[in-house]
Length: 114
Length: 116
Figure (tube, rainbow over the protein chains, first blue to last red):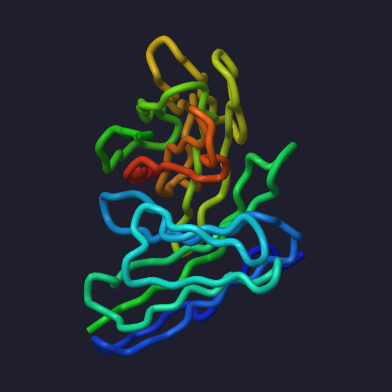
């Protein structure tokens, strides 16, 4: 199992550009989520999904879109990047139900918006 | 809503010293509690967890006990190693029910540096 994979590892954008951060998992987990990590603030939930076709907002959803067309993939889209979106982004997944307490994290995508 | 407060860092220790990282939480009901560790340049890994009051989670020499009376989940290790240098996050999920399953609420993280 590859676990949770994320691409790219690092990206530089100009203000106003758009991009998609990719996330995939091969563990057949129903639940997937996106977090951003900023210094001194821990990780904050952006969006999450409990299955294909179902998404919902987390704590800091503004400026981000998600979709979940398959169980495996959960891309995060920035439609018009802003410097405030400079951060490290982590994707995570877990089972729902018995034995599903543990979330598995990807290695992260470091994003710099100029 | 749920919240997690960790002791301010960074924490710098010598090898074989005793480690405590304090974590307190606010949540209704009975949340599950976690410690995650992030090594340099990597994602987060689950270090240990406890799902009900008085449970003790343990892994790799680290321990934490779920104390509902003090709403705490302090991380301890009796003898740290250089390889323990990382960022440690306390987190909780669940609590009062609803659709909160799977949503982790994190503390701000504590940077630990261990010197030889």
